Image (cartoon, rainbow, N blue to C red):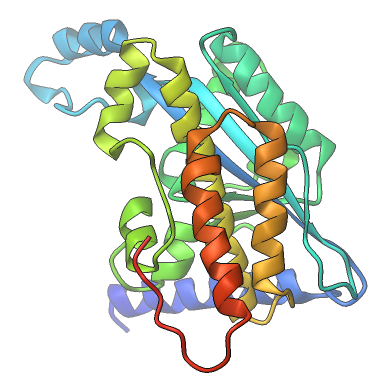
Length: 281
């Protein structure tokens, strides 16, 4: 057996184990999730010191070890056993405008500790968000929530949707997948977020972080429904999502002008019969 075949077999076993764990006792227990997104600033002073010390052996790109948390947004989601409705908890977004890095991370950890049975849902989080949180905990003497301690990328306590929707295909970016499936995403271009952080435009950073969570939440609902892990009326679920997002951020242009109009279209189409063409978001 080749190394590639062994790696593929190991991946299949891990995914099969994860699927069984997620569905064990699903009829008796509520399913809980916490959709999470982080935004960063490069720690250029420490990177520059490293670059000088390492010389030609230094990495040219500023990788996740030098990424400092500058914003975090999350949204709890619950599916009660035997019920078709979805419950959205309080949506929260924090930025460096009025919080230090440790305060933001501690708030994330407090939320995860308050929901120990919730699977942490990210888009590409296993590649950056989760390692950064682990590094931050070790650096500042914080205690990791139990959901972040398992090092396996397919741990039952986490869902990286970027990996899950791709399987063996190449991973894609969140706005790439969202555009392909007609879901609103990212009020600002992805590559602009770093500059917005550096400029201290925290209202735009907050909007971007919140939007990433809401887009990821919609993808999660569709993903779980397609795998028969939940049974919901999607139009009603999206209306509930809008209500929760509006209550948490009534000033959000993305929620009020973009996502709300998109959901209205989904609801309208759900009331029609036959195949209804869907326009791009």
